Image (tube, rainbow, N blue to C red; front, side, top):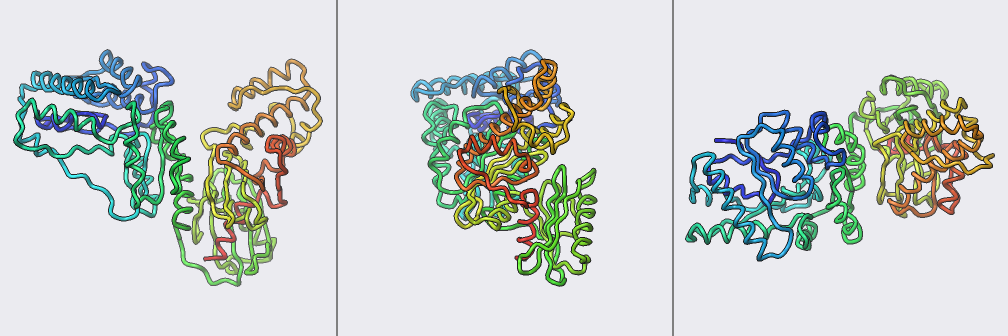
Amino acid sequence: MNKTYYICKYTPIEILEAMGADPVLLEDMVDDFSLSDQYAHPNLCGYGKAILELCLRNDIRELVLVSCCDSIRSVYDILRERGNFDFLFMMDILHNDPECSKERMKKEIMRLVREYGEYRKRTFDKEAFLASFSPEMRPSADYISVLGGRVGPELFSMISSTMSLEVKNDTCVHNRFIPRPAEDMDFDSLLTWYSEALLSQIPCMRMSDPIGRRRLFLDEHIKGVIYHTVKFCDYYNFEYSDLRREITVPMLKIESDYTIRSSGQLKTRLEAFNESLSGISEKRGSKMKGKGYFVGIDSGSASTDVVILDKDKNIVSTAVKPTGAGANKGAERALDEALEKAHLTHDDIDAIVTTGYGRGAIEGGNESITEITCHAKGAFFLDPGVRTIIDIGGQDSKVILLDDSGSVVNFVMNDKCAAGTGRFLELMARTLELPLDKMSAIGLDWKEDVVISSMCTVFAESEVVSLIAQNKRPEDIVHGLNRAVSSKTYALVKRVGGKEKYMMTGGVSKNKGVATELEKLLSSKLLISDLAQLNGALGAALFALEL
């Protein structure tokens, strides 16, 4: 049987089966876009590029596309010119006017029957057609629904393995369902019925009237929603904006560019969302029998922070050490220093909780918890009035919204590039030949309002070099950088719905210039504790005490 690849829920795959084909959904994620970037526009959506990459790299001989959007039309044009197909077909369907759409769909199906039949020397097999329909399968217990644009199997597997509840893929083509037709219709009547049935499915966002999609999120068994969008695709971003105001269950928005590497960046968000739904996860060792001391280790990209608490939640020791090349080694060094300061040994420790980007690589911990949940725990311990945490670390920024009990209500992360993070400021300080501690204060003494127009680390560095060449004062340049960082962070606060009280944590909280500019934008005072950089480790230690 021949593999005939398809991409869309409106593809008449039952017809293809009746013609002797083996329909296979083309949705695998790819490593990169090295081939597709040679032929496609840079702003083509990630899925469109993935189709090109898969077809140009692999021996895909038969492909049926549907005119979903301009991206798929571009993909078709490129593959028609560059691909090596035995059969390449584009179905053209309408976006509106039900009667016209049904007639168009019927004509397109008949065209597919004719062209595929000529290609394979096959005729329509009614028995095979009737046998190709399957009953609709819906979860009967509580589950997490993945909505939005299509999710590659690699990313869906990560989501499923991360969530404590069952996960249902209701994205795009995966909510496809066609009921079985009556057996007594002739061929023409059957195609008329089938055309209407295809168009009567839960609509995708390309349709002019997507109101029927409400069926996807009104199920009483849905306990959380993960909403996925593909980079450069606006259709599902529109729906997400509406759902934020309508859905009452917790919802997490994620975006991928449809490469495997981008899915890895989402793991922390998924783990934190699961923790907020079902409590803390991943216990990795039994609780030790020490002498009433509890350790939190926060493994960040720049530093590894350790906090040791006693059974009464008093801080007995802390340490901040450079992470270095290995998260586990960095954690060992930081923990040894903290133990030495407190005159303790490993045998005195009851439990260890790890957090941060390197938490999975640290050996010997009892439990691993995301930095989102740990920062919430630490901040609420320091001040129960905190409702918004602004954490700017070495490689990412995050804003976390808390409820009155200190639980995470919502959060957003800027983890795809170094813009606005400690790395960004570190590189700018190096370019200005300033030590970081001096850069923290020098921008407060500004006179000229210098604007840094780009937050891309590379482009911003070029701007700074140009400003130096123009003899701009370092104080003014640093002030411009502080404003740029605070503006980007403020956008995250607005996205998450931040509200007072605000607490700033992370290494950049030490930067007085950034904090001052951020306070201006917030029109509110930032709470900055002496333990701001240790907040994640503090939260982890508090969780260790509760094990």
